[in-house]
Image (cartoon, helix red, strand yellow):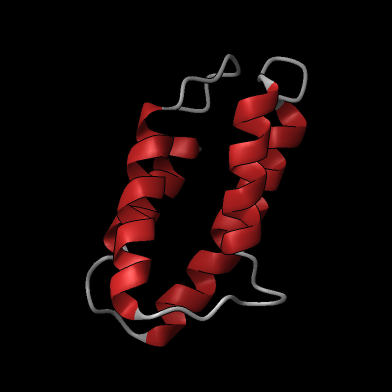
Length: 92
């Protein structure tokens, strides 16, 4: 699941309709919350903190509005981080 989310985030660096970014916020926020709750005992505090920050950044309830260039950098960093994240529960 984390790899799918990473792929969706990396796609967001391209110019897409705004509706994609709205759906992306929901998918990333809920996906990360689900993964953290499922893997709570097996992931370390640093990873939990980083994933919490990502979930807050992508939250659909109180969106954070930044310029497109800033979001491109965030999407690249978050996507690469998620691709390299190793979880015990096989969230590949």
